[in-house]
Image 1: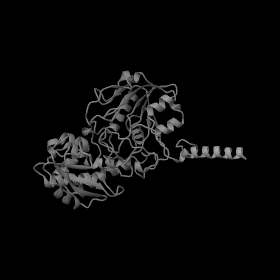
Image 2: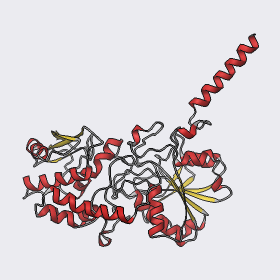
Image 3: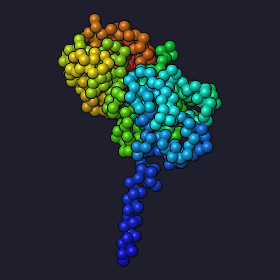
Image 4: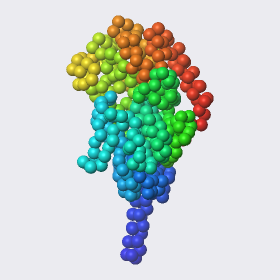
Length: 408
């Protein structure tokens, strides 16, 4: 009898372990990043091949294991890592040059945001395949998809293979919105010609780029499993949000980012150097209560505005008192980041015509927006509906021309 009880206990413990493991035989019903799928398959597509990896510390598995350790654990011939803007440790400020470094004092990490933003022929000559595994946040001006674009082109030109380990778009339920990128406005904050809020994963963007720009590229996308694009990433079981850049600490900030990032190109603080970057904005000359009142008149869905004062510790107006507003997302499924961002620009233009002047930063603003249309329409006091409709027409055309761009 003792043996039967003991055997049953061992069996029960084994079942509990299997059911609780994200990589169990039942794991196909749970969420897995692309790196987890690659891990489960023993990194078979990289076996015997000299490999490099574009990533940062946000590139982890559902269990929190760094992706490069997964590759090394399976014996992949990993030659080096490459890091995008903000560096491998995600500590460099926006726009700050990142130099080459070494992981643990020995393993090379080449910068793609330093003296060059493109893998060199020499670097690619050392490998057979370049793997891309970065957490994007869903806005065109976030530079990680620009890094991917340039890496894909370089890999194609050197006859190598490009592998994308897919990750969620954290704000995927937000529909595509905003103006498309005009070729003459292309820059590193706008390289991929998709809507400003693109509503795609990095894997989907890679496949779209191959089809439209890099047909000769040997591309393989390792898709996620158990991914549901109808929910925000922090609502997916097993999803782990590691800040992909210093001022995007959570999914809520990623959601608000497309609404306030335009202020980077103006004389308004976008909240950098405060507790709530991108979730609040202001300037010393702003009356937060008055700005709140004007913004509330737009009746924007899913958001409330609260008058605030703040003292940035760095970036614009460091150490100065700023009046402004805080964006309180009350219903993330109704919130419209691009529409909200346009309303903010219009409100600032109305209240501070002598101080808020987009023409002084036209070059950078147009690069962020991907067009000069937004700046001109705000400057001419076009209505919110007129601007949003003009952008919607461009998105609708993009949708019609790319009906099969989604994987999930």
